[in-house]
Length: 127
Image (tube, rainbow, N blue to C red; front, side, top):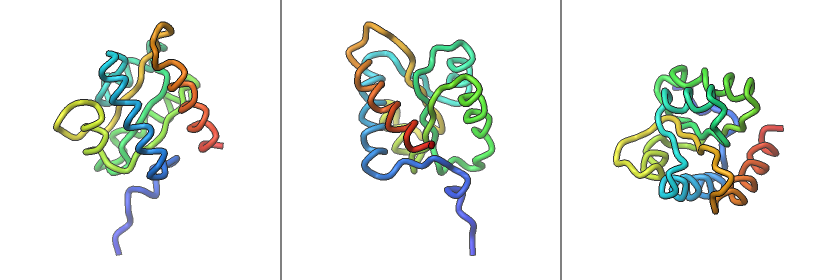
């Protein structure tokens, strides 16, 4: 019996919430409010530019991105896992898989109300 890496990936979005997150990531990509990849996300969080972090639950090994939840909690940035890195990559506008992405802040953006609504859902899930 194999232990799934999903057990360590918490909080995991349910399918409906995951689709909503991926749709918002796609809109953020078109609005140039998206950083992708663990290194870019780490820099964005450290600089205080991140609104929300999305991580892939099937990253292998999962330990390569487990520094991000710690950093996010330290900086009070909500984070959530989606089931697959391939769907995360597609939502970010690339054909490769991506293990981490974040939506960056921009107060003048049309996405601000959508981001705030999704952040509150993610924060409720983490409680």
